Image (spheres, rainbow, N blue to C red):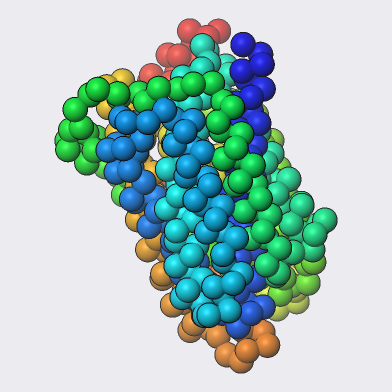
Length: 409
């Protein structure tokens, strides 16, 4: 069993190494190659793929092919697309974005597939899965270090070659993973399940509908960080930007370990609110750092990522799991991913793209008023946080959590 956990941990490491090798620095590459105006589109292809991937998983991957073989095929396709990116970028930004879209359409379904494969081969999910999944975060960090600190590739095409090589390695490695038959083999595909109709019924519950709406709205300003924080970090004087950004993932690991302690004292509502407030504070630090290029403020904002991500997204997954029945667990989690990673971040990427255009002048330093730019998502996140604090109240889940804690004692 230990050897299986090691093999699954390597899989997770490579899975997120692929994403981390280019996602942080593609904005710097585009800025350095005269494509700053299209950066928001590079961060829109992921949300579009996140919207489409559940249909692929529900119709094809879950029913017809062994999971490890689907993983191999998808990663090989994604790697091929990444190898092509530097060449099509010479044609123009839209050709490059189309190539990134092909990569993300192949990559996004593998996020669910790696989870499915891991859950199939472990006996104690609550004990084993976090220890396996944490290697994904480590993989992201190492990718940032390799591309940025070692290869100095923040603004060069080397990031795409590293991604392509890692994707090829994982494609080959996937074929060595334990055989995992399709979980729904022989089961007739139900449009009801694919569309998540049963999960949509959960929206009749007022606290859950407030949670879903709040999650969607908060993800709109959140998109500004993913698309433009690396570009801004370069502006304030940081070199090896991906290396600096990786400290956010390091803090994510720390707060992931501490989450049970915070959960005990704060509960669901306050965990979510603290996560939202961390985004407000982060954007406030970025706005204040602009005029004097205050690097410590930017670094502190990056280090807040552990609270920003764990307290909001991870707590959201836990809350959703407690609200739904076992029969619709997959649909419910899929609904949350669709609303946040798909619609929320997708709409956010487009809105912040238009916002950054408003504060853009010149070509050498594209955005001349970063302070005003960061103030807008700060205010948006603050408004959502206040509305959520007023409207969200779910005593049922709070009682459930407290009862579980008492039992644990």
